[in-house]
Length: 73
Image 1 (cartoon, rainbow, N blue to C red):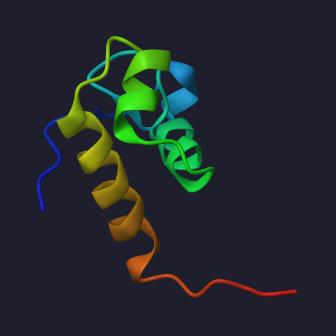
Image 2 (cartoon, rainbow, N blue to C red; image 1 turned 90 degrees about the vertical axis):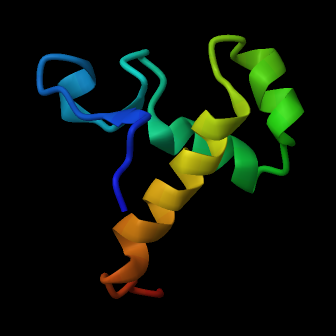
């Protein structure tokens, strides 16, 4: 899958995947979703975001962990 809204720039946020060049890490959006926030609440908290940014962030996170084995304590 091609991610058109996710950027990785070593000169911005130490190369952390961010949304559309903003200093909004994908991980932040995923965490907000995991905490139970709706897309509307996330956009209210971060008005630069669009609904597609949230969807693509979740798709990116799912793809990132798809081929990795997680360790459980």
